[in-house]
Image (tube, rainbow, N blue to C red; front, side, top):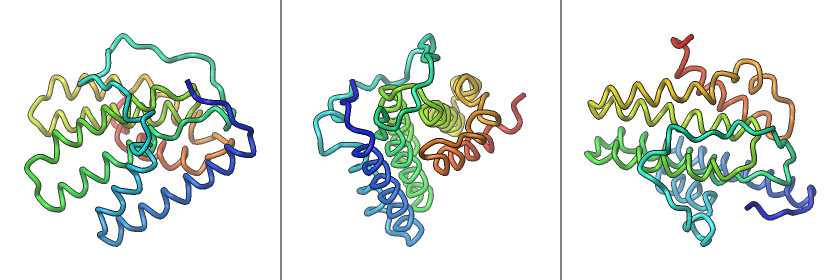
Length: 195
């Protein structure tokens, strides 16, 4: 359950999260991977027991359905999943740049953790974007690990969240529209060949 805070408190928290994201990507682009990962990990709430207590399955159940009515109030948002997704992507890019042997299993684990955290958020377009991109990227990682059946399954499964990106996410005008649009473009780039 996400604790209720006043809209002003949450708007301030949202802006602080956006500043942290920008700072983390700035460090990443300056090849300071450790600081970028640290900032994203902090945004995931790893320093608190709430995020650390999330039980993460190796892969989420395919039967799960989170198509509930959208709750677009900023005071109800949980950004840990978005931070966790970026933590996973930075880890993958760091691993690729250093030719690390364990980059893909670690990234896959981080992606499923990000999906689990995102699933705790209230239903709004940002949650669907994060879950779709997590599932899409995990599918790509499975393919890179020579697990094409599982990879293609997850890539196709990501479409359940990403199918509305062109209409819903790209045209979203609420709080965080710049983040939603940027993430939607990433997701659309990954599924461009799909119908």
